[in-house]
Image 1 (cartoon, rainbow, N blue to C red):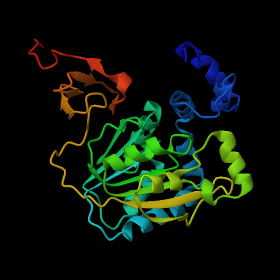
Image 2: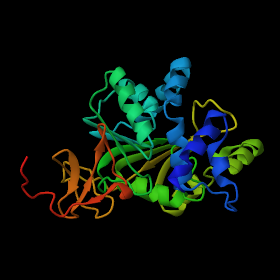
Image 3: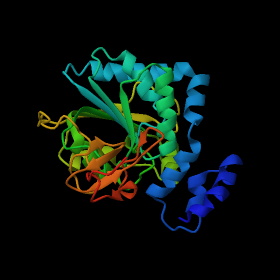
Image 4: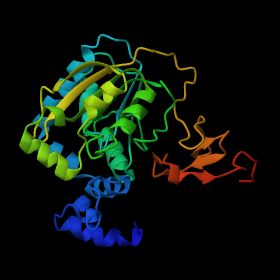
Length: 302
């Protein structure tokens, strides 16, 4: 997409139009591209916080149910991550409800604007020890088996046709449990299924997980969801191989797949020789954010 078209797209958004449907015009595929998802959610940034502030009970009930799932796992965990964290409204409401507080908490989203809003929201909730960053669901800048509990909340949703790729990447970074709260196409009625198909939502998450031979402990309609036309399904996947992470720094260069270190205001891969910028306190760890910096560690005069 030509980035010069963003002003035109903004007019569509300001008029209440559906950005993804607008971007799909002239496109024969019903699938939503990564770029469509990014543009749509970036323009929506801030709207989720406003909704939660107007409807606090909904989020409270939803995260109470998520906390119950995690608390009932009866497993020791040091780290937790929300993939597709958005504006961190779910994460911020969930953390205080967990019986065991994780030592390390992470969240990522493909949209810089959503992460920035999320940082501000967490700050207002006095949840300072949460690391948010820009990342790609299909190329997560996190090391293998690095996070004890990984969960999603309607994050895979708009990526219909990419169920396998999303599951494999989320499973890769998981150390103990992967908890998926996603549209339950397999459990939905005809009207809900038609709506999901229209919007390009995922349809085969459970069957894909089974085909990958994952240990699915449970798959059912979630205890609480708001929209009957987009019912939430709960899937709990246990990863039998539980590893001790040897590298205490789980961040990974998405291109070279080597560790990232925070050096002189950026994240740098010493082996990959790539640097990733931090824009207004938001680490940007997408492939396209990488800067070739072969002399980054040279000593320059200040």
